[in-house]
Length: 57
Image (cartoon, rainbow, N blue to C red):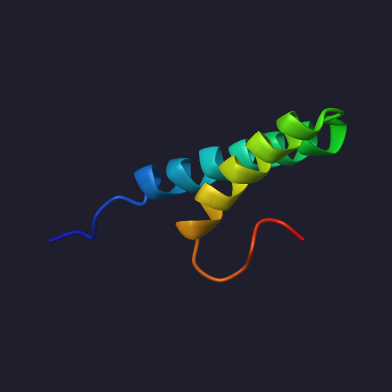
C-alpha cells in the first residue's frame, strides 16, 4: 500500500502561510485602533492552532 498523498497537507500549509502574510501586511498598514485589534484577534486565533512559534512578535 502506498502512503497517503501529501498534496492536501502542502496545499493547506501554503494557503495558511499566505493568509498569515496577508494579515500581517494589513496589520502593518492599519491606522485605526479598532482595525488593529480585529487583525490581532484573527492572528491570535490562527496562533492557537499553530504549534510552536507565536505569529505576533
